[in-house]
Amino acid sequence: MKWFKGYRCALSLTFDDGLRSQLNVAVPLLDRYEFNATFYICPSGDDWKNRFRSWSDVASIGHEIGNHTLSHPCPCNPSENPRGHCLENMTLQEIERDILVAQARIEEIAPRKSYTFAYPCYETEVGRGIERRSYVPIVAKYFIAARAGCELSVCANSPKTCDLYKLLSWRVERTKGDTLIGLTIRALIERRWIIFTFHGIDEGHLPVSKYDLEMFLEFLSTYDDEIWIAPVCEIAEHIIKIRREIGIK
Ligand SMILES: [Zn+2]
Image (cartoon, rainbow, N blue to C red):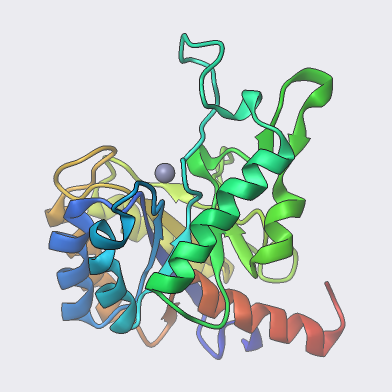
């Protein structure tokens, strides 16, 4: 029970790419149910300060703002541009610079004591062939945890064994509220940390409907004495503390 502060499982709601529908729909819904979430943004562009001002307000009411790189590099394949700005064409130095520029901006928008990261397109490597390298060790230098994706049938994290720098998350685009509830009940039975990755709500890319999100939050509010619902950084900080106490990495 110590892993999750006496709760039976932990759950983080994460939202990627700083979409308008997250500000207009997700944040007001989360606030109504008094849940804090994690929003992974890419503070790019010359006018980033103006464009990302709203995320300061989101941070000030208790949500976590996390790093999703500056330029959101994804795998080159299946794009048709062999010289495109994409992961196979990048070096470790380039991805590190990209992450650090974003980080300086996020620290200005949303200051806090520790930060987490989300890999764009859930991909953790740069380069190709014999030059291919994981950039997980770079992320581990600057963050307390990082969220990747998951291709397995079970995508919830064991607090004892998970790599905090490559946390599994469920991609939930076009997922119904009933399914979100079922996955959460499974995490409850297995006593794991489940992380959901949302994008648009009702609009934008990879959407979930407002109806389904609201149904899910309603379910969570009836189980909030059993499920620890908190941003990624808060749960990661606690797991790090427990691992230190019992002497595991
Ligand atoms: Zn993204």
